[in-house]
Length: 87
Image 1 (cartoon, rainbow, N blue to C red):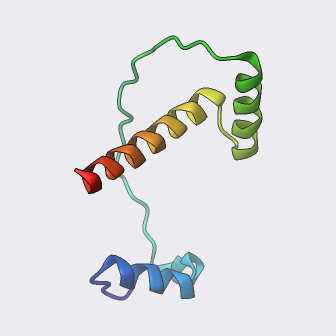
Image 2 (image 1 turned 180 degrees about the horizontal axis):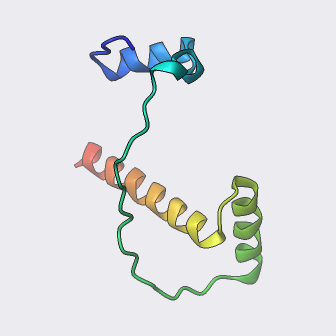
């Protein structure tokens, strides 16, 4: 693997290469990734909205609750970025 110094170099590299090109160089990782503990909450949705959420989640291969978490996290990050750029 080349020594990539910046994120831009890395992006350009992977646009032109595949992980398959380096299959022999890969080693198994023993790192353990711990998922943060989730706190349960109760939300009420309009049934039609919930049906749409479930349909979109299924298309992505996710549970609908995981998809809702994804959408909320993405929306929160975007809002935080917008506030910091306007702040």
